[in-house]
Length: 405
Image (cartoon, rainbow, N blue to C red):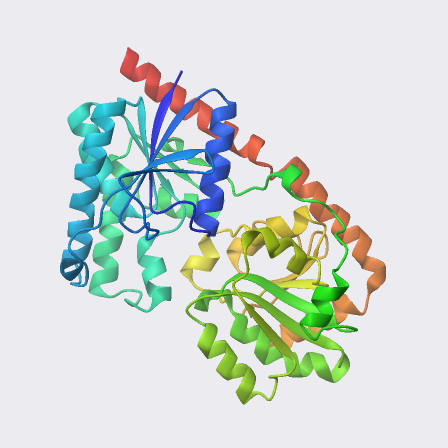
């Protein structure tokens, strides 16, 4: 039985696309007969001891370095990596895994590589996004800056040293290979969905709809985290043009995040306060009720390296539920969505294009059944977790066979 120790940025009980992908990986790996273990870094901010079991999953936690050090640029990251390395060494010596599987960011990969080298354990690195590109979106650096180039060099170093590299999409794979990494050393584990977890054709909860002031309205919605790259500012900017042709439309924003205050201020400035509903974050068990209210899901991501390279989970979840969706034509979306077949794409960053695409879709109900069916079929046949996780098998086997040999 292959024993895999996963090194993770954070995990449940925190909720994010990162934690949901992680759980899907772990479930499917165990179905394949592998034994999985899980260590999180100090960036897992939920309170816990050195070990914790959540929903049947056991996690080894890494305590945070001194808070004063963590606030110092550069020194904070160095302290975090040293802390992860110490804790990982301790856990790896106890468990003796066959493989160390480090997941983004590179702050996890570098400690894993050092521990793996000392203990003679193969290390694989799974890239979900590049740390330097995420930092650009968070506003902590600029593309091409000294910090950006340094971080990129660390990423490339980790990619070259890892025994194998996994990533989530073809956009990221192409970028990795372009850095000089052998193509046969890079395997894509695509984002996918658990088909059994999603039902098609949920019925709107009339009581919830009325409570939100949305009775009798056509709803364009977004459910998730409010990051700048999601482009929700474009959605609000497009709403006046949509209302000119379809005055019954309302925008429903479910979630929260760094752009929460800015989006509320934008809605106020545009005179849309009564046309946009902000629910705040809702319990994960309640999310489906809000999905069932939405007529069209909007994914208006801005064009930047992060969104051009990385495929998101949300559109796949929408397709699994047989939902209608409009999305910007960034590379990450185009890898998932066939325009006019499984969804509707519009020109990224264009308020006019988003408004036109939304209105046209809402005014052509004769297209809806075909779009919904095609989206559901795509995830059933191409983007299910069982098929995706099977791609780990060959690289894992090659590494464990090499060690045994």
